[in-house]
Image 1 (spheres, rainbow, N blue to C red):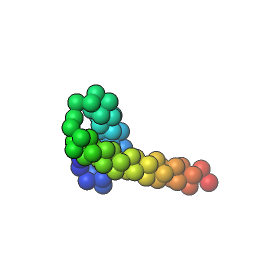
Image 2 (image 1 turned 135 degrees about the vertical axis):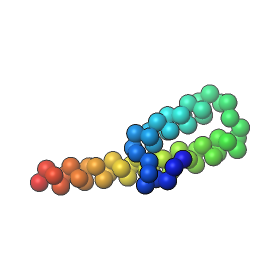
Image 3 (image 1 turned 30 degrees about the horizontal axis):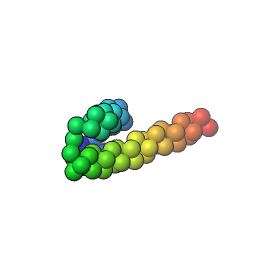
Image 4 (image 1 turned 90 degrees about the vertical axis):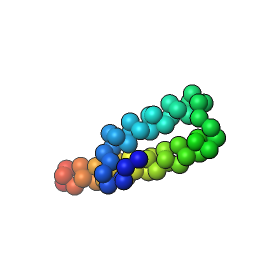
Length: 63
């Protein structure tokens, strides 16, 4: 994963989809599953922040 300040929302969503797919297929070890889960958690937080920032900007522009 690249640094969050370099990653786009779209890239984060794509990576989250890859992680979910890998975990759904049960093709990774427990250790790898834990690493993917941790990465997914960070990506989810990143996406949530990006959406919140976009919502705030829209709210400001709508005033």
